[in-house]
Length: 158
Image (cartoon, rainbow, N blue to C red):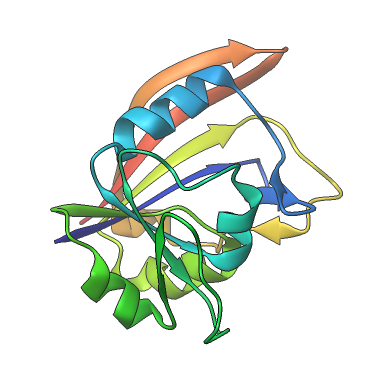
């Protein structure tokens, strides 16, 4: 099983603010859906609660420390190891939040990052820094929306 991370990050690796995404681009939402469809997705409780509902067409796996927590339409687990064991697809996608990315970055084979050419000074959640020298970088597509440039990049561990 391949472990992949998917995220949209600003220039300073900003991910979110107030338990929500900072930027909402239709091209990025489409890329996320097409890339993760049919796969298992792993996320933290806060990320799951920020969604309107469990993501259709994907096995939703929610990591939480709360033993009595249940998430409608999702499998609830209590560790990263348990989450990986619950995944049942050839490629599993880690979709957030910051702490979950940090825990799974060392075992990720690929990073699908939407690199946004903008900053958010009041961001409260960040993607962990990583050594880009350990990866090959492929630009999948580039866009411009609302005066902001962004690109879908695939980093594959060497």
